[in-house]
Length: 464
Image 1 (cartoon, rainbow, N blue to C red):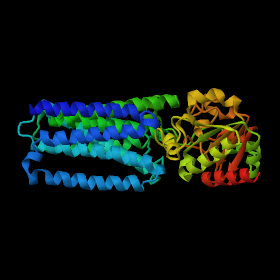
Image 2 (spheres, helix red, strand yellow):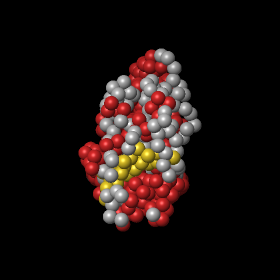
Image 3 (cartoon, rainbow, N blue to C red):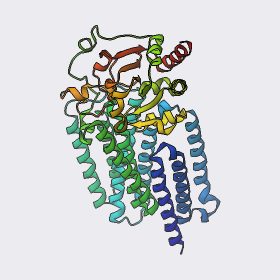
Image 4 (cartoon, helix red, strand yellow):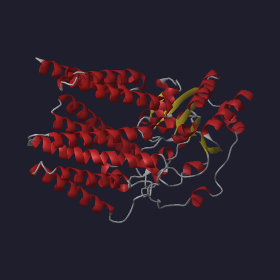
């Protein structure tokens, strides 16, 4: 009877996880989706405590568990309050890594504690160790890159893929050893070491432009490691939850790759932005063609506009300009201007980065337009304002088949009547190539910090 109730609880938790994922697909319902997922996790945790007899074991049985829950909850709450939105990609990378690290330790402890390990336990332990170690150390490298603690060129060398293949082979051979002789627990930790080095060198070739895909993929790895650990523990809830995370991460990775017109293999081994890109130099593209503008100049252009599309990018996130952007949009709408926001799937450093920032500023969801929906309207747009975006608006993706971003779907802002680009300088984006949009005849460059530029523009509009 108890086993039936436990499995029913896991089923209810799984349904809540699925409903939560569905709700998370849209900003309007994301908060509710997050709540459903949290309730599902609470049910799964309570069911696991009952299933393992921990609560029934008395004070000594659950005191450490609840102490861990308390400490983890406090740390999570502090992180939620203190971590800035611009650092959220790094935070996601760390959380992915912690999931992989937990899988390593739980599977290893289960192997050591097993009295008569069967084939399922040993094979699942090997999978948990390899995937968990790759996830943990790969996520730490992703965090370090996003936090600018290491450069995109760190750890890149000739023959790196051969080393990765050798490390994977060594990990698998050690896994075979463990399956053949479960008492050789030291082989498990050797496997973890080999897989850890593999995790480091799997992520080091991935360039900054591909980091949103890397984060989604590492998220998938953490789910797969959790599912494997579920088989180690014979825990249906963990198997289902890990499988959901693994599948959703893979699907998201594929969506991101499609948005960049690249294969997953190319992302893993191509390293866009990790090495200097060949092609025209900045002087050849920009020389004598860039037109600089002031806030007053831009205000004059906007004063005659009837339709404005704002394109947010990572520069908006860095300067925390989303609230100022909302105020600019409201001011324009008060003057009868139609204002919309064009969202590129890989703008920023993690999936949905721009959506989250704009939602934080209470910008109505119906004004956030996906790339496929808004691209056809740029020719009818009076002014396109690009705030800190670069590669996602670079027209060479359409015109230069030899470019690192060739074929990548972009926002066609260059087709607007006038383009205003708010940027600190002419420095390249993650792909490391110059952007001809900045030197186009219909483009004005407003060189400034994103937030300060928007605030100055609001002041100029009010004074006009």
